[in-house]
Image 1 (spheres, rainbow, N blue to C red):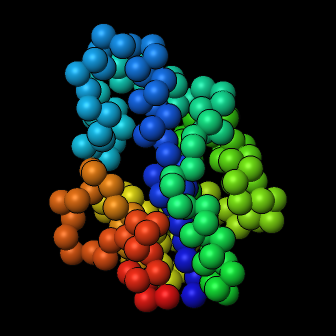
Image 2: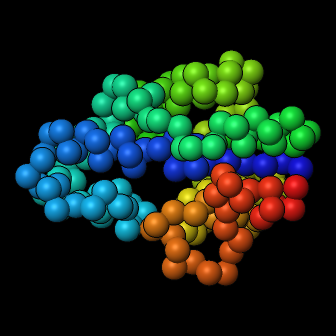
Length: 179
């Protein structure tokens, strides 16, 4: 089976790192923020006047490399591979990619090893990528093609309103995928 996994969200905890930076830089603005993301679009989770600052942080050097791994993600990817599945990281880089793309590669090498850098598929439109399963936290993955993969939601606080798709986390992935 070919398993495609989104990087930011399922593997790398972008949300935790962004909240950490914003709390350091804008403590008054986030003093009442729970730290729980309720919207998929990052900027929609914060006061509107922080939108530009958030985009600046996301474009800054070191941001994508600094994400902690999501608990259990590295172990799950390694086990999927050991079980004989062809696992690829299917990630949508920022349009301002100066630091984003190289840091995504460096992050994969750091946590999954240099061999895994050959399994990174950067794609703004994931519907053009072939596979059997796409594990992604985005509530709806759309593009120019009808995808051949099944979108299995990586469970997140901001996608729980979606009830018509299979959903997994790194504790339930084997059961949900029937592996």
